[in-house]
Image: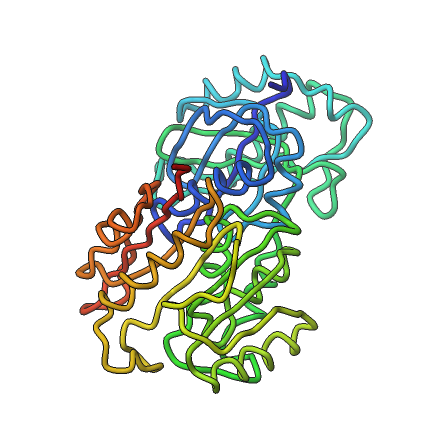
Length: 346
């Protein structure tokens, strides 16, 4: 395990549990050895993780930025400035720096983040030979005020949030209602723990949203759908981004594959694309049995279903082990269960 500084990750607040799970899934899939040290509101601190930032910057949907942790303090000006005095600032030697501090939700509202920026910046300047540059510094010192105090970290990487917005479903050549946004699609793919060069499958691929995210990550991407129009539309959408996937017109209850490394999918639940008169639970039960046959030992599947379907029980009956469960309220009449399952050898 690396002896370097712990790494702080600033996470998106779009879901209460998915961002933390996505971090773990990415690092596990990339064979990165790490240990979680602390979990706060939109903050995760890990130890180890050689090249963790590189992989998270490339893959993550719900990580905003991160870098080496400098200090952690209780929410007190005196304690923050004392911690600044005790911190190792040798990485700033001969380099310009800027300080920016953000607040998560309403935590520690009684103190101004801009005043704290000035105090920290002044303290660091007095202790180093570095100059302050708030336009384009060589090093950004970032701070975050959250439920378990104040963290300062060196920003080493930042994910491209705009890229997800540019891939919104309505901007694609082929659109169909009910499609998941790119960030949640990317998170599903990451939770399947498939890495570059391995085989990924979406057996209810629809317009190709999961396939787009998987192909962008360099996975061997396969999509299946019962609806010819969806297969054609998914092909158009993939071409729009200069991407390729194997697309097959077929039934997820009869998977035409021998082996895949992981699966991520959002079945139709009877909306838009038809379930051909079968109940959602019946379709998912048949599919789960097939999925258990084709996914490799230790392979993961991330699947969503309406809460009332009890997808966890369906997965258990098919022989999968439940790894984690998340819930996502879509609207008043639909709450999704997002379930990650594992095929266990034997």
